[in-house]
Image (cartoon, rainbow, N blue to C red):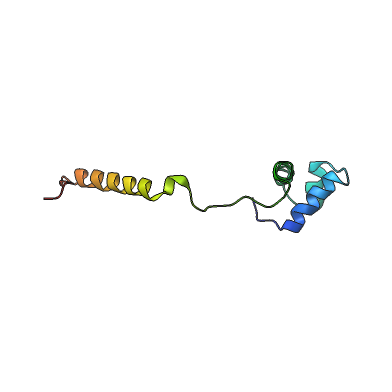
Length: 89
């Protein structure tokens, strides 16, 4: 979804809640997608705000131990594929 301004998000939500427009009508009035209007209204009901959720950032599977395991496994597999011994001499 396109990064819409907070003001636009709030105006769409206001049009639905205060003015009684349907989600489709509010989306058409402000030139945003119908799905965007639905998501903003869901977010307001769940969190009380139209602030977007975080995109990216730290993910649990990217932790240092998990990364170390993935790198070790990949290098071991690469060495085996190249017919080299993965163990130090």
